[in-house]
Image: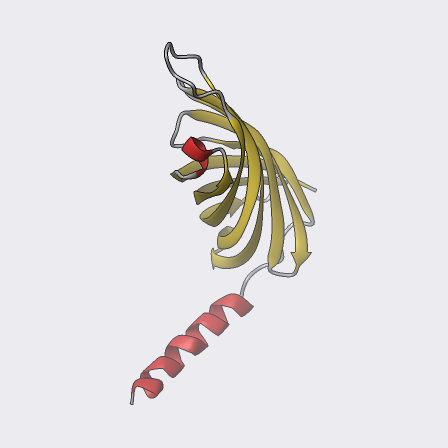
Amino acid sequence: MKILKLIPVIFCFIGISMSAQNISEHALGLRLGDSDGFGAEISYQKSIARYNRLELNLGWRDNRNFDAFKLAAVYQWIHTLDGNFNWYYGVGGGLGSVDFDAVPNDELDGGLFVFGAGNIGIEYNFDIPLLLSLDFRPEIGLVGYDDFSDNFDFDIALGIRYQF
């Protein structure tokens, strides 16, 4: 009986995934935001398949306690919501370098770290080659600098990209 209830849900998800619109071959722009302070990233998206893409971000994070540079890569699946609205989700990771501000009697100086990331967001694809997005990318430190890589970070950002 439970299987019979699951079958319509499966067909619904298949229908949603098949109705996704084509995505742009390339998109280049900025991704602005972060939960630990202000951060800006140069963002590049490359279409991999009809409904999939790879997003690469290179950026910096600034906080009163540290400065960090990060390189992130996320593989994404894109689905149509309504008209020019899409939603997407993905998985990936990256690496970075952190430098802590000098605090008297504190031995924190910084180092390298590696992190894993998920991604979920919504985007609006304008009729002109402009793409606006709002996404949420939770990140968890895997290896590297101890005091920074053990953290769980909720990265929320606004993206603006030129499609070509």
